[in-house]
Structures are given as structure tokens and as C-alpha cells.
Length: 420
Image (tube, one colour):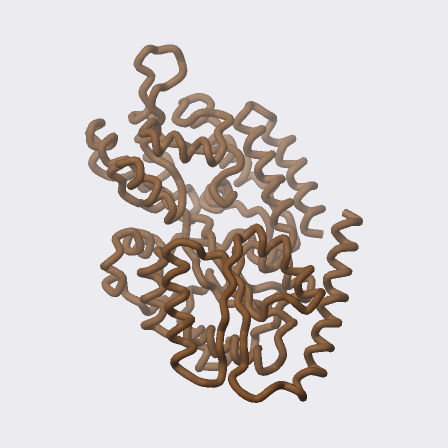
């Protein structure tokens, strides 16, 4: 803990010094377009469409020029603070949404409250849960670049072979269907085919179990600072799914996210919870798939949403902040938002874009139709990594037969320490 606190303090001091330096340089700013450096990790089709959007923005006006640098998400996470400390960082950076609060807390990002209050920002129609993802202590420190709820990808061929014509809509129906699709031909207790690949740890974006907790009426953290995982609702959720996996054997125990991907891609699991990338995995393995919302629990139908956020760093001077905000406004224009959605595979970020506008991409259509189930994963939680590690330990040990009450008590203490 001491090392983390020292690192955070050093980061804040360095970034604060950066901000002061930036102010002194404003007066001597050169004439001509203001250059804005932008780090991001989009490397596939999403990177191509983003490059086009950046080029179009640069051509649309003559005040600003956005220059992109492509890095892996891990490299961005590892190098951002050191780069800002030496005045060699980006003016705009994209990163997984759950990491934004870490850097906002360390003073690395600009508060965008005034930007959001402007009608020219194009933020009024942005999906509210996506805005929650970039909000820390009640202030927005970024804009969403992607927000998508986890969904169930299912093998249509296996469903049809079992005579199942409709996808389940409730937990009980989901477990019943998964039981029907679980096949143990030789009766040795180890199915050759599982109804669902349900990881009990290292899950996709660590969002599967948080989805189940919310659907069951529970939470993990509230207001970004209070651990509430030790609740009757979460105990009931753990008991329900532990029984489904360990007793009904609808999924292997001890399964992690990579193992779940492999089971589904090999046709040995009829269902799998994932994000847009599962479409390409299924297609690469010749699986005839469809997409559905995670079935509703006793409290509601909800799914943790994964996302990408863009933020302005405090290295940026006043002109660069204005340019970054101009780019964000452009990115969130309705027509640009449609182009980004179609090209990247993410559902539209705006609530006023009808599904018909993205009909050219069936995956986007399917994910858009279930977008209302999305819930930001641990919004505003600075130390999300340690929180999700505690959840991982809780779920893995629960499915392995541990005492749920004891495990919840331990997780409660660990999570509270993390958010403190």
C-alpha cells in the first residue's frame, strides 16, 4: 500500500507541476493550427475507422490538428504517468473505462464539467450509463468512446439439435436450458458438452459476476467508496449459481475466461457470456451463433458494460483543451457516431440513434437491442483492480465449495480496504 500511495503522490505532484508549466507556455504559443497528440489502442477495424474520423475532423476546420499514436492498452497504462511527468505524454488519451478513475484521482485528467454543460458538446444524448463510466466524485473526466453490455453468445446449431426454439429470459429458464444442453454421454460425471461456459474467476472484463450480483439485487460498491458486497442478496446469488455449476454441472468448475472462450469456440459449450469480439471468434470457428441479453435475475435484467473512455490530460494547454473538446464534439455528432458504431462494432453512444441506422452491421444491431441492460462496472471506483481481484477470489472459492458467509465477510473487508 505504501508504494502505491507514494507513486500516486509522485504522480499528482508531477502532473500538478506540468499544469503550472503549461500555463506559462500558453502566452508563447506559436501561430498556426494547434497540435493535439492522441494516444489510443485501437488496432483492428476500429483503428481504421477512428483514423478516418480523425482525418475528417482535421479537414473540417483549420484551428486544430489531431495526431494519433497507436499503442497497446497495456503500454498506455504502464507509461502514461511517467510520460506526463516528463512532459512527453499525450494531450488526449483513450483507455478502458474502469482505468479512468485511477488517473482522474491522481490529477492527470481535466474536469470536463463545463464541456458537458455546453449544448455544442453533443453530450446531451449520450447513454447515461456511459457517462457514469467517466464520472468520478460527481465530475466527468472524459467522454465515452465505447460502451457495450456483456451478452450471451449462443450456438444456434446446438439449440436446434436439442429442440430449443427460444432463448431463456429468466435465471430459472437459463439454468433449465443449460441443463438440457449439458450432455454426459458416457455417464462418467464429466460432460462432453456443457450448457454454458460460466467462468468462476478471471472472467471476461471481470464483469460476469458483477452482472449476476446486480441482477440478483445486490451491489459491490456504492458511491465509489462503500463496500456492500456482504449482503443477503449477494449470498443468494452465490448460492444459486454455485449450485447450478457445481451440482447441476451446467459448466465446468475452476473455469477461467480463456478456458470459456476455448470451450465455446470448440463447440463444447452451447452458451458463453462475452462482448463484440466473440462474434469474430465464433465466425473464425464456423459457429452459427446468435446474441441475446443475459437473462433477468430476481431483481432486474442487467449486465456489466465494458467501455473505452477518452480524456484530456493536464499536460494540455488551454488551446489544446479547447481543441480536444472540439474533437469530442465532432466525435459525438450523430452522423459520426453512426460511422464509428458501424466500423468499430460498438453500439451507438447516443440514445437518439435508431437501430435502423446501424442495420448494416448485424452484431451492432443485436448489441444495440440489449443496450438498455448495460450497467457501468464499478463507476467512480479508483482502485477497481483490487476490488475485482477480491470478487474473483470470492466467486472461485464459492464455486469450489467454500463457506459463502465467510467468503463474503472476507471480500467485504478486502474491498473496503481497496476503496479506502
